[in-house]
Length: 335
Ligand SMILES: Cc1ncc(COP(=O)(O)O)c(C=O)c1O
Image 1 (cartoon, rainbow, N blue to C red):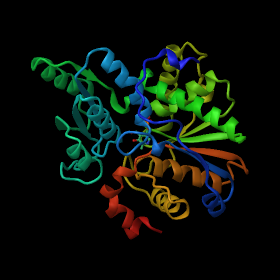
Image 2: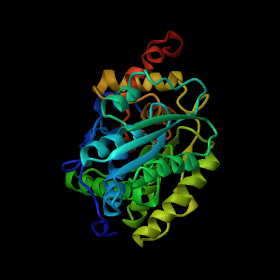
Image 3: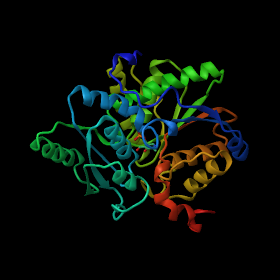
């Protein structure tokens, strides 16, 4: 795996920290939990999209783009970070916001919506759930071209094979750190959404012959559908890198902690967000890392990890917390 062959912008100095979570591990039992702090990646607010954007923005710049176009949910971390990268590179950025949950978009919302405003999105246009997102982004691109500009479209979550290289790079980083610190992980647990993080990680671990299984915790889709998505993208990423193909047996994307649906709260998510904050001083988010950690906690309590050293990949998202204050304080979700 030779990732230096791919043009890359650098948005994070060095590696993100790899830390033990002794107080969380003692509180829940059943596993020695560590965390990879990708919430501390560069660009405004950090989080997993920064690694994908390093490759995607390098490609955009190589192609002479002056305007980035992407899509995400109302509290999209991906849109925030794409906009931050655009600001840093002196590019314009137009966002298509998919209102996946009816009534969930408000231009005045806190969290990431406030940051869209502060970082000066050239356009924030809401479309209803079920809209053809590729078509909506093509409409934006046509408007940019009509005005003499050069658009570059980034798919939702930056989850193309090129974007997923960011998480193949993360696999390499984890292996180097684990060796350096003398800690061998038995498994990695990660949130699985638009699938680029999960897929890139798998492609990287397979390429490195790491022998570390990944437990994906799905935040949106039924298990079989998500596992098919992850496998397809992991294989396409391996093709891009010229490395061995992941197979179906490498992919697990449990759907037991999605709850009623994407971004909708669960008591287990609120417990996870509160536990990490109170025991370790680490902020998760309600849509992705909170649900992924809820899955890890439940599996550890069930004895699924049998004393394993487990690495939780913290994909970020805390800039959205303020938008979910009502839910996080709601007694119905705090049991
Ligand atoms: C904070 C956070 N964690 C996890 C994910 C899921 O990552 P992926 O979309 O690469 O599956 C996202 C995606 O938006 C995210 O914003």
